[in-house]
Image (cartoon, rainbow, N blue to C red; front, side):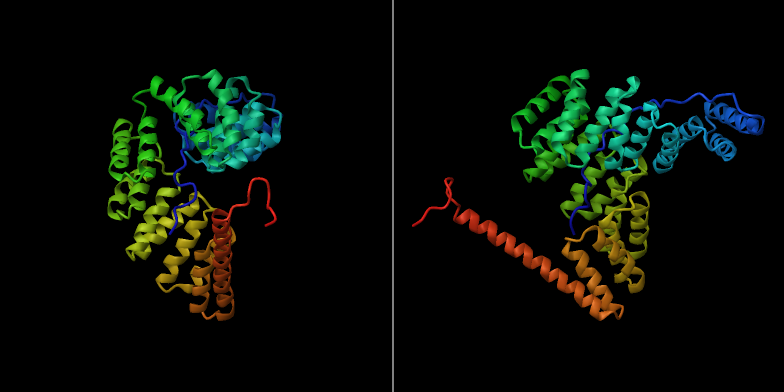
Length: 398
């Protein structure tokens, strides 16, 4: 099984303390909407008292009477965000944005919520608009840089983060991502320069340990990688994704029983992150614990609906426990989301045959052979290019 897509990405935006723009609610309501104003006023008082659930109910009640209050949608979304209900927050910020599209503060809030909901591509446009908000201009650029990093668009990430770097020259998160960006973009000198500045300005930074851990892992030195990640976790045990990364390394090294504890720890620190649930489900599936595996995969898919690997393994868990018909829809989604993955077609084909749908199953298995044939042909072409390279001046006549 391959690693889940993006499992090792570093989402460095969610750990910052973001200050939302809470918008003032006007008092100029018509008589028919006075009760909406009262709901909004009570909601604000409840929110200030920390009674978030009651405040949410009051905002909803007011919006049922006055659905065109952009400020109320915005403030309701801020409460959802405070509760780490990022998808609900994004939906509410979107309503505020639709009502007040030229307000850069609302645009920034929408982009931030989409980013934390795991939708970096969708977050970029509102963050671009949010740059016009003086209070959050640099924050918007930073988040755009992280979004592009998550999307593996290294050059775009570098462009945004270098602007941020001019405002925050010693920011450890900016330096850390830039070091990774430049490395991935094939600019080792610039990568080392950013890493050196990080080491100089923040010698005890947990990101130093993270970089060392990744470097050791890449160099196949698992003991040193493990030690570095453990040191980073000991320094900052509540930092998101460090536990996930240690669990992921144990998973990669097939030390599955040791992976469980850090992965479960990540679910407590980052309850809205899908990846630890996926890996816990994978470990349960390997141990033929089909019920727990299904529960983990369902949680991963609830948090990240377009998670092809989780669709595939959910289908596998159902198929291996004999529930072939229930497995097929998940496997179809896996094929749809990962059309070039042989194992998705293989498991769908195998399960269709088990479910009595032999012609369609055989068609999927034929697709597996087709994909393998294409890969063999591509590998052969690459090998021929390596063995008999074309001269720089072009082919010459014998």
